[in-house]
Length: 107
Image (tube, rainbow, N blue to C red):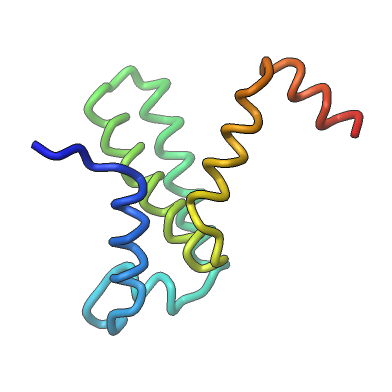
């Protein structure tokens, strides 16, 4: 089986975002705008937290997938490529988390 990546998801979201809203949940969400998409992302984040503290592995996997999907939709609407996020993660992981956080607080 071929490995599915976030880049694959980004491409799927971009393609589906261009579909007619009556044909695609992604297109419908994009058409509703960033406020609606961000609200849905927040809902999925809360559901992911609940799944995490509920000690339900299957539910946590499912909710995490929903969270990542909705994040990709929000990024798509904002025209922020996944690579920008990955570059920021790479920058942050080049130092310890404590050091990185301190640097953000004292620019």
